[in-house]
Amino acid sequence: MIIEWSVAVIALAFVVLVVYLIITLRSLSAMIQNTSQTLSNVEKQVGALTTDTSELLQHTKEIVVDVQGKLQAMNSAFASFKQSGEAAKEVTTSVRQVSSAVADFIRAKKPERLEKPVKQNTAVDRTAEIIKVIPVFLELFRKLRKSP
Image (cartoon, rainbow, N blue to C red; front, side):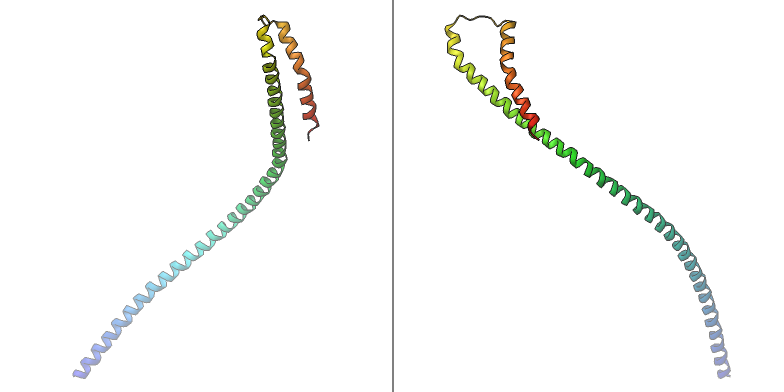
């Protein structure tokens, strides 16, 4: 009788084990099915992202080409600005030299003015001084036009 009970207990344990395995396998099957659906959705989303990314890269390339073209166009403008700056520097140097020459001339004439009676500057005197400076500025202008 003990053998019969032992066989019955073993059979019952085997049935419980089989039922547990069936439940586990069904759960595993449902999990695999959910994973399959998730992967299918991920593949669709990656496909859409790939398309969007490709379009974005194409637009980025177009923008880069456009910016490079505009930078090339700006190079000539910057070169012109550089030349203008150099011309302005030359003008400043020339004006500084003229100012220095005029100041030296005034300093040299200053003792003579002290000996002469002081007279007020009139509009005629100012105009005469301006006329004396005009050839210097014309020469300066010619030099600027000749420089590249």
